[in-house]
Length: 109
Image 1 (cartoon, rainbow, N blue to C red):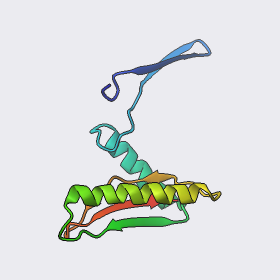
Image 2: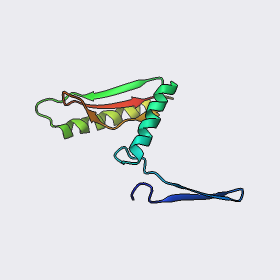
Image 3: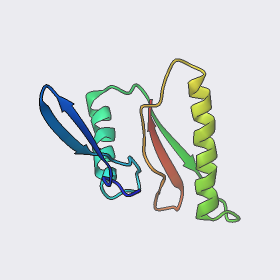
Image 4: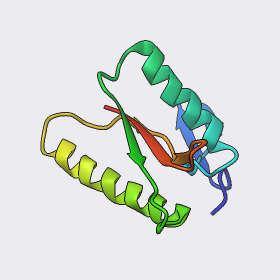
């Protein structure tokens, strides 16, 4: 399914309305700017009370894909730990790299 291929249609007080359904993926050209803006807005509004940066420092024997997979495992483990508390993760950014080739991921809780 491509983003906005499907449409949500409703009727309210004699009015008919329709809006595109978004896929919500960070890799989507349509949804990425929307999610990025929402992510930044959370920080500006001060709603999150934590900003977490996960970093996987690559060693010479690991490539970028292995480092990204390490971040995925770390995020999954962190989410499991947070789920055991009353806090919830409100937003997360995609994996990105820095100048040293380290993978990073940002989370608001």
